[in-house]
Length: 183
Image (cartoon, rainbow, N blue to C red; front, side, top):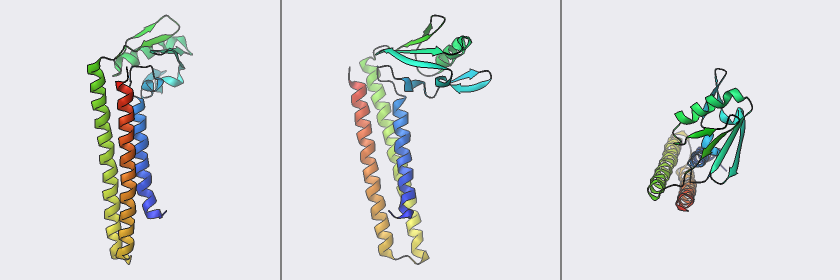
């Protein structure tokens, strides 16, 4: 592949990876430890990911259990969860924290699907912006002794990549929407 094209394809790939990571943090009724990925807990004055201060497990389909390695961290972990936008109330028994995921209502599922589609649309816009940047860069090549045919070929290849990535985004959106609507 042409090195001039590769940089734009890499940017599109990063957009897709970002969307996938974003979708992992959306809870779909089942316990998913990735909903905790963005949470930081104050560990001796340093914001630390929850995964680095305790063991996270899923004992049942709708329960996440966090067992901190240092029991004095329980209050800090609870505080971080309550301050987050997860909408979960942690319960602790002195040694572990449990997060119980309630069944999602139909209304909440539809709201989550709408959010998923919005994030998918934002990813498509980002991919199209990369395409625009690439096309602009290729047009500037005309001034640098590059033939019109070569520039046309580069823009055609970039359009094919854009179409492929847009199709991938659509597939991710549909898969996540189906996952959320599944009861």
